Length: 217
Image 1 (cartoon, helix red, strand yellow):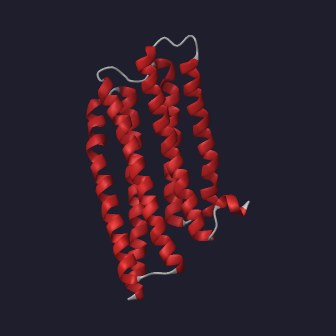
Image 2 (image 1 turned 135 degrees about the vertical axis):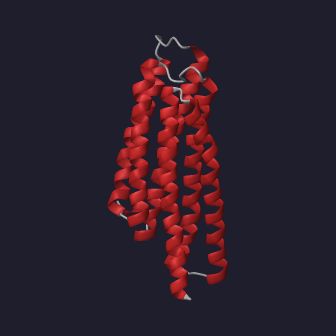
Image 3 (image 1 turned 90 degrees about the vertical axis):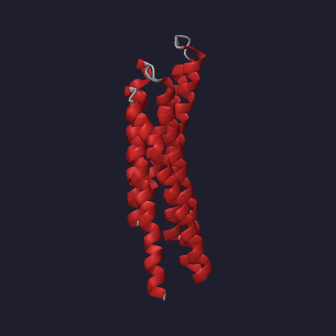
């Protein structure tokens, strides 16, 4: 029975890694759709968001069922409770990709991003992809050193976020209020996606070490 329980526990972890891969693809595709006004790709991201949602719902039901049947304690209970929180983070990251894709669809056939911000958004997409990829490794390998690195990676995203806001506040901004609102929201979506990834890395650190990274400093 215990062997079966730990196999099911491992399956929960594998599902979280699977969700990470789907989120990474969604964010990359949403960024491409945004920058190239690719309506078909935007629609694909929007439609496939339900896949991530369904996986989260199934994973949460499985985790709750394991808690009810096996009544785990100590590290096993911590793993399952933390998995519930991490699946919620991953689902939210998928939603943020969906929001980006919907912005691309809303402005089609125009490109939602003004030319002077195109490179910054492209860079935000690249950094976001790097963070998600590293987060997936943290989840799979429970690498606490890599988990700590995500804090620095997130600083890079924060700088890009501030760059967008600074551009919008410049007197030379010529694209109007509507585009400024679009860009404010888009920058926030990328910044929040990175924040969720950092949150997941912190939870993995807690699982392994039994303390939060800030407490260990």
